[in-house]
Structures are given as structure tokens and as C-alpha cells.
Amino acid sequence: MKSREAMINNPKGYVVLAGAGPGDPELITLKLSKALQRADIIIADRLVNPRIWEENAPANALIIQAGKQGYHNASFTQEQVTTLIIRHATQGKYVVRLKGGDVAFFSNVLDELEQLVEKEIPYEIIPGVTAASGASAYCGIPLTARGYAQTVQFLSFNPTAVYPDAYWQLLANNTDTTVLYMAGKNLGLYLEKLLEMNADPHLPIAVIEQATTEYQQVHISTLENAKKDLLTRSFSSPSLVITGKVVELHHSFQWFTQKKKGSVFLNLSAS
Image 1 (cartoon, one colour):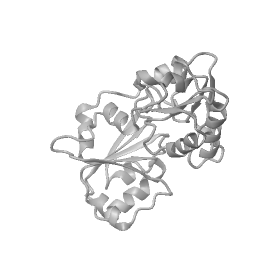
Image 2 (spheres, helix red, strand yellow):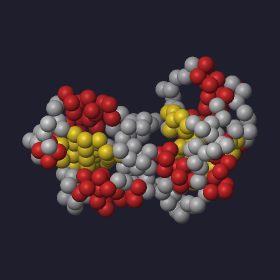
Image 3 (cartoon, helix red, strand yellow):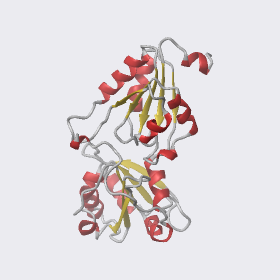
């Protein structure tokens, strides 16, 4: 097996697939910081705080913001992003592919891995703090807690998510923690399905906007009150939804508050 240094100096280039965390630039790993310091090319998702490369990458590194944003035609496709990675790597470059949160939580890392293996390009994977961990920590909402929740499940919920009624029934009966990624624009449908399946109307729910950043906002309600408390709002991307009894703990243990208004992330709709 080749050494890591031999792989990095491979004429076919080298690719680092890395999780950049949920937004706070201090939440990246030391390993990612070192990778960024030697990067020739950085290909970043839209939900990556620009300060991460500004504070860690060399001044001559080429930054490509390959943003993907739902409901917006100007965003990059996964095929375009993968092509960028392969093109620069085969030019012998050290490529860092930055993904928001963790590299493998609801991302398209499989597409990129398959192409890297097919092209025989050496790579490594650096994990990151996923949005659920960041949001729960910065909101004072433990995802599991004695007397509140023993389990936690992570779901993505967007227009392409199709769950059978039997699965919705399981979700409705669950009083432990459920975390929804990519649910900001579809929260109404999620609430409608849970209540249709006779979920506890008093179950607490939290929507966290731009978690871990100075723009973070937290909105608390219950399933029965969410229509008037939450559905009248327009949430900034990214927004994460947490349901379960653990949400009650926010009022006792919140420690981080919003410092600014606006957004730290690139909004393709405004570009």
C-alpha cells in the first residue's frame, strides 16, 4: 500500500472530501485545516462559511463556489461538481472538496467517490460536525437525554422524499427525537402528515436557522401551534427542524444568541 505522502504527490492529483461543519468556522477539524493549507483548488458547497478558506487556505489557492440550491436553476448540478473535481485532480492538483456539515450526511458523496475510484484518483475523507450536532449544541437541545429521549433519527424531507403511510405512522407515534434536514420549505406538509396520523399535538418542535453562526435564530412551538407560530415565517437556508420532548430543554439551557441579522451563506436567488 502506498504511503499517504506518495498518494498526495501522485501525478493524477489528490482529492480531499471534507465536511466543513455547520457554519461556525471554528468547528472545523485540525485535519481539515491542514488540508486547506496545502490546497491548490477548493471546491465549496453553498453552505460553507467563506471564512473557513479565508482563514486557512493559501492566498494563491483557486476557490470555486459550486453552490447547489434547491428550487433554483442557477445552481450547479452534481454532475458539474464531480466534473470539476476530476478535471482539476487529473491536472495533478491537490483538490479540497468542501461540503457543509459532515461529508456523508445527506450529501452526494457517493457520486464523487464512484468517479474517483473509476479514474483511479487517490483521495481521503475527513468527517465534519453535522448540522444536527451543531444546531442541538448551540441551542441547548441535547438530542438524547435521560427521561426525554433514548433515540434520535435523521431524515431528509423535500419534494422528492416519498414515505409510505406506515412510515408516517411510525413517525407520528415517536416521541423521541427526530431531526429533519432540508425541511424549511416543506414544514407545512410534514406537520400535516404527522397530525393526520394522530401525532401528539403537544409535541415540541424547533426550527433553527443558520445554526452555529452569528445569524442563528431559534423558533419553538408545538405541532398544534406550529401553523400560526412557524408557517407564517420564511426561514433562511439552511434550516433544521427538531421534534421531540428534548426541545423543551432549550428554554433551560440555551446559551448562544443571535448577534447579527442577514446571512453568512451565498444565496443564489440574490446573485
